[in-house]
Image (cartoon, rainbow, N blue to C red):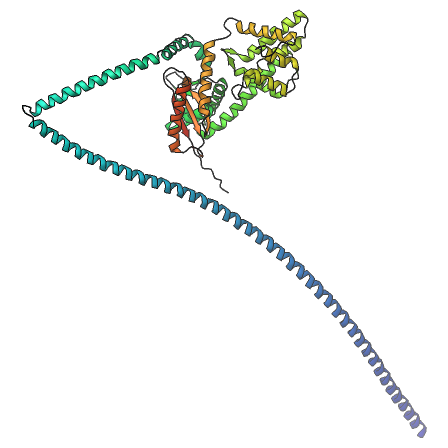
Amino acid sequence: MDTPVLVIAAALGSALVGVVLGWGLERWRLQRAKAGAEQEAARIREAAEREAERIRQAAELAGKEAAYQAKEAWEREEARRREDIERAERRLEERRAALDRKYDVLDEKERQLEEREKELLARLEDVERQAGEYDRLVAAARARLESLAGLTAEEAKKQLIAQLQDQARSEAANLVREIKETAKREAEREAKNIIALAIQRIAADHTAESTVSVVSLPSDEMKGRIIGREGRNIRAFEQATGIDVIIDDTPEAVILSGFDPIRRETARLSLEKLVADGRIHPGRIEEVVAKSRKEVEESMIQAAEEVLYELGIHGLHPEIVKVLGRLKFRTSYGQNQLQHAREVAILAGNMAAEMGLDVAMAKRMGLLHDIGKGLTHEHEGTHVELGWQLCKKYGEPDQVLNAIKAHHDEEPHRYPETFLVTAADAISGARPGARREMFETYVKRLEKLEEIAQSFPGVERCFAIQAGREVRVMVDPEQIDDAGMAELSERIARRLEEELQYPGQIKVVVIRETRAVDFAR
């Protein structure tokens, strides 16, 4: 009985010891696991802190970069705004200065008007005073006459009339004597004018053909559109082209009159384009005239190239070709100069072939012998000197240079071909019907008319129109004011009287045009 109890007690003791040992081992294991977990937690926490610090530093750098970029963008925007403000301030300052100038002008005009008003008031007072004095003198004279013995007011009036008649007869006699003396002084001038008029009437057909172009219209209604409201279209056209537009009773036609054939051809092309387009106003007119002027220049170059191709001449400088083309619209004594140059070249070449000389060089010399006439409208000097300078500048051979001067005996003939060119020039000019002296004189007078008007300071352009009976002068509005226009027209008229001889009278028209231009932005 005791043995089993002991066994059980031993077993229970052993179990109890095992339980205590197991609990102690488990506690020790849990303590080690807890210490490891705390160490792992501390490591993780340290790593998290390092990562957080890294993220914080990165965020701080990114924030600083963004702040820097934002600052730069703000500074650029601020600089742009400051530039815009400065530009606006400059514009306002310019407008303020312009307004100040306008105010100064207005103040000056107001001052002048006030002075004029004071002057007129003073003159009015003087006139009124003189009128009162006159009335007083008349009354005194009437009283004195009536007091004369044996004279009534009617008799005194008759005596006064008789005295005035004697005085008028004396003045009339002096005037007649002065007129006779003036007529004697101007007799030669008037005789020349009469002869010139007679010659012009004889050459009327040729003059009309050389100075007039006719433009056909689809209907007579187009004439009103050409004239425009209050004549603004026709004025703009004449101002842009320098050609007089004549609108008369000729059905469905408008006449263009002018001595310069290049201007007249430009005007003809421009008017035909305007009529075909239907849009006729000053702005459109200026645009079309500019395009037509370019087309005329191109046609002159084409005419020169055709002549060169016909003659077989090559290697001319483009600038010489341009000047040669201008001879298409240049005449001398009524002879077309491009055709004259062509004739001289052909004649010189034929004679050179017969004599066994250089045919190609003879043609070249003949074609270019009067090339300077294409420059005489724009440059000072004779056509010989201008042609020689042009050909020398662009490398023409010495034979050509010698032909230009030798055919007017300005230097000796150094080459046999130059003699041929001189002979061909004389043959072409002597051909019956080739030249008309009167037309050349007429053109030179019109050129001189424009030259005199152009010589005054402030003149931009001038055109002689109405067959030389009118000259239109366009002035620079910055140099010539409204008051100066009247003075300029009077000075030009007096100069024309002194330097030109002409039949009838010449009308001087001074035109001053101002434009204000701005842009909507």
